[in-house]
Length: 542
Figure 1: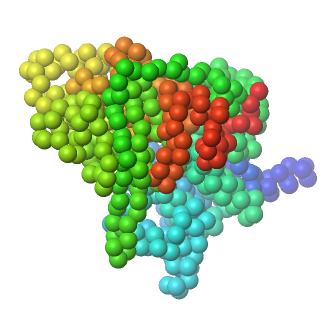
Figure 2: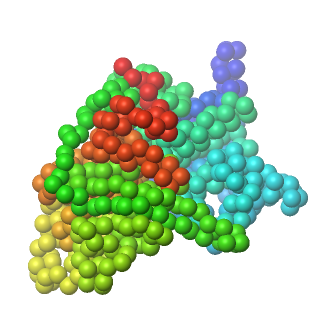
């Protein structure tokens, strides 16, 4: 009895028989779990499993017609399921902090980042303009933002994706909450920054007794960073246990599928596993020579930042070259220069011997048919008002390729190529899952029969099962169509799975380049060894 009382006192969050419904249809079914004070618990599962709905229910932020139709959510004994909106506003930020997944939709683009952190501090009761600014700079520094005092007055668009995510983490820490909910907080971050951020969150948990509810699709990360893992599927908890129990001895078929599909788990178990067969094409489709790019810093009296510094590499026909490096390393800037979306300060990026930046309009148009992009966020890169058919045939219409009937036939062929049913042609993007939307983005990129696809973090936002499907699709398309890929990613486990060659970048420079085997098994640069050492899941190597 005494033991039960002590256990009850030690419980911060208790979810019991939680049911959430949309329009009378339950999407969560009798979900129950406890979170102790100072405990770290991960919720894992594929997209649509219900893990983010659990978070939204706890915070009272269910969208649209969503409502809690059963059960309770007790935070220190207070039932949040029955709390008023006024009460919930007093809980969010102060008692429960949230680190959301998408920084661009959670930061005000017209407001300086420092002011947004200062607003969070003021909302949580802090007073004094100078004290607030000093604390905001401290939070930015704690979240891993270098030169925080200078960057305090910059806008979100002046930060990389990883840096914007760190701003969200700083905001979530402003109220020093008892419970921190991190919903895919590092899915857009490279492994070294991911480790830095999660080390900080772990320090917070240990030092302040803060509890952490960690929602992620990365099982290796969940295993490394939490005390307990909850596995969800179709709105239900299907398995729970310690990381060792769930990752090394899963009891459910669904959990076994998740573990098998996780690249970080397989790489941690065997770093030599599944190497790509080396390929050497007859000629480079892409040649980057001495590429450099400077950006002016707004309001910094003519100061400049060297985003890309003397970068050179080749991509051979029919091969995959991965560019890896932490946020701000310059890898996405290189991609934008190749695509003609940025003009280089020096050097050239040659597609089949021609540069988009310096070519005449006719040549530039031809080069843009040869090289096509696939971006990280398929929903952000697809017009939500267009049908899938119109999205896929848009490049054909822009380049005046074919007739209406032939374009419709081409769309059907492309849907077949990316393994989507032809019936999706008249749907809109919001009617498809994240993985299906990414398949649409790939089909769109293939419409003009390009030779080179530039994939910028094309699978980083997908759960492991969908990610596995997309990577298999890319491999199959490369084999069948002879495609060449430039694959930009922060996930070294994915690089090992899909790439033939690797270019490692840091602060705008290439620090190492070579075949996958060479870079993974015998890295020559300390930075590369640091990246490899930061891959999650190493503790579960067999």
